[in-house]
Image 1 (cartoon, rainbow, N blue to C red):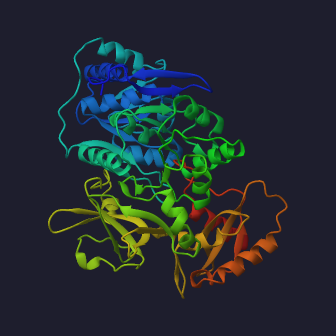
Image 2 (tube, rainbow, N blue to C red):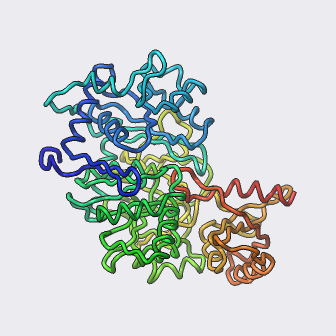
Image 3 (cartoon, rainbow, N blue to C red):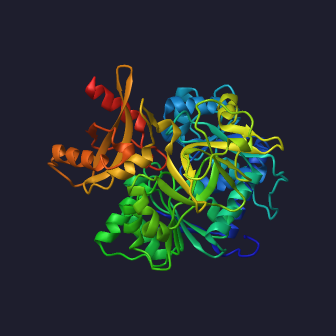
Length: 534
């Protein structure tokens, strides 16, 4: 892209309302090359595992692409996953290099992150301690040169170790090969007909990396990327109105907040050709509200996938609002669309045990709920330094293919569409039935005062009872909770899968994941409710 369109904007960084800093493809490429040459001088080379804890911005992007140019392995873990999990993740990754903002280095020193393996430290700020190199020094070592940097890497070689958020268990480091990244890139381009020259507003850092790789201009908004649910709607709308992006990616929490603000002010976002939202199920209400902001030819797409495999499937707002929304309210789960081209999706019986070998006899029939399994070029093959996690999630076929267990419950309907019913670990098993979170919650979410609900297992002695937690719509005060409870019990009695639920708990604000602020921590809610009744 730098050779073809040197002056085309590659990245535009927002620094407050109306303030932006722009970098061309040539400027971005030269900046990455300079850092890559500096890395080489410092001893960072092909295969060097490198932790990156830098806030999204120009430094973040140039550092990531410089690592790829040198063939070093990016190690990405969310600081928001907690000190304990971070220490464990970095111990597993065994990084040799730590690149971070000054406060990340303070934490590294204080908590002893990867102290036995890290040999090179780089800070984006001033070097406050001996042995820590500044990014300024790295750029100086790289000097000025017209020579491009691009190490010869093979498709099967490791490109990155990306840790899952840990929102539904212990974070695990998914091993990405260069082939995995290429497959993701091609799948996204084909799925959403993305072409060079478009403009992307990216509110999730890792997804934003795909923009320049696809020939798009990436707009990086001024926001706290660890709290998309608290983003400033005014800044997001300002970026859209200023640069007229054709694509926008946002978590459900972000779309909800921005959508409410823009709707109340009668804003229209007609430049957008497509809006993507992922990270957790997106409610039809959020989709409908944001859909009212864009033109009739545009759609909101909700791709389904995970760190270990993305994308798996996708569905557009037209199909959701016209057809599948109603089925969700009847307890059918959430339709996540047709599988993407080149990816095999199957459903197998749910088990909490490892399955070593894949066999086609494992496959369930249409409309049978089980665990979702995927196989294809964007599916990662293992977790780094975690044989137990790899054994639980990966199956091997006789011809050498790897099948990944998504850890999600779902089914395939007669139209070959995939439906999501919730995490396998969130199912509630009683003596009479197995209840799936998304299916039950879709029924209770129809109540007008309910913002969202969560199925939980209520622990009473040796018995697990299904219960529902409710977070009311914002702005509702002095709610008649007895009446709402009565209403919810009446709604639940109409469906077989919710007839067993007899307890309702009201929670002021559900605990959610740190990456998208949208995945509900049902285990925390279960412990909270169980303590209330103990």
